[in-house]
Length: 235
Ligand SMILES: *[C@@H]1O[C@H](CO)[C@@H](O)[C@H](O)[C@H]1NC(C)=O
Ligand SMILES: [Cu+2]
Image (cartoon, rainbow, N blue to C red; front, side, top):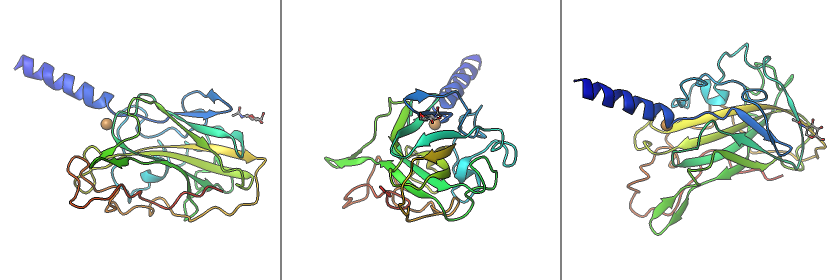
């Protein structure tokens, strides 16, 4: 009995360790402190994922819907520059990475910002279908980086990084969403019109072939990973 308790405790520790958060904004080639520019998430201690795509948590997963945004700083970044998120651990799970942005009114640190259909996707790193199997972006990296589109108009934005982990996604609600939202003031922007836009919640139903999928037993005639959400706006 004692041995099985030890085994259980060890297993729980491994499960907890196999989750992660995205607490650090990367900008200007610098990795900033935990939760300085990224809204602190409700899983800051548990590291657990969001699994309900219809919940408010799917937007930014804030610890507190009213207090977290104003408590978080706003980072000034240049359009066309490289930004990203560093995790608190390697992104262990096989999954699909993407990044979205939304204009944030009245400001990036407003709790009520970006609650409607204003989010557009600026980057993705999908699995590749090769020799009958899905090959996933590296699971030994602990950061993702990408470019703020050069033509993005200057202004206040939220930047939402996401991994949809797919290791237990074969049943509805099994996919695990690891999310972080950074608060940005974009400068030196252009006159592009970002789109198509979606809302969070709303962007996903949970039944998309890129979310409800058994990655270890692909359907007959499978032709490749279909990214959930809108197409990437590259500016
Ligand atoms: C990044 O560099 C720009 C240009 O020098 C500067 O205005 C901005 O404050 C820097 N951002 C951060 C988060 O340090
Ligand atoms: Cu996990």
